Amino acid sequence: MGCAISGLAPKQVGDVMDDVPIVHLTDEHREIIKETWKVIQENIAKVGIIMFVGLFETHPECKDVFFLFRDVEDLERLWNNKELQTHGLRIMHFIEKSVARLNQMERLDQLILDLGKSHYRYNSPPKYYMYVGAEFIRAVQPILKDNWTPEVEEAWKTLFLYITSIMKQGYVEEEKNQRNTMANTSRERPEKRLNVI
Image (cartoon, rainbow, N blue to C red; front, side):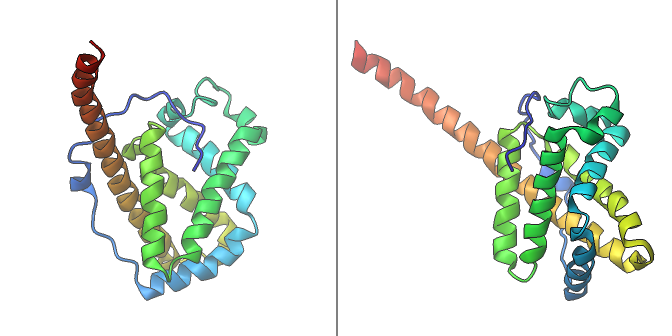
């Protein structure tokens, strides 16, 4: 997603998939998400910034992943921060793409898988992914007002569980790919040195 993040050393995830539930989006979930998205979409920039300021308030350790915001102590300064607004919009556009692909699950899965892979390259570990979903839900509740129901909450929570599970899968795949690439590079180097001599 073009995240402006770095700073955490890539960690071996190992069995990170063990704690990921198998999640299925029902037709009812998809319809609820699409209907409520129409209202949320009108406030897309607002939700993005509320989501991230809330994320940093409730989980300050998340700031360490974002080198641009790592040293910001006064979270009030973030409300007008252009970089945070831009990143919030990126996240919201990802959610928008996800909603648009709810009836094309293969395309949705690939979108999410690619996002997980890119988060490995940004050094953004899976332990943070669900926090974003929780903050999104907190940010949209007041926007949906009386339209916020237990069914709406369940649908959005299910979507974020779904996204998180596939992102973790992408993260693990990319971690393995990088390890294999490094192992292959290490094996090739002795041969190259022999050819040079």
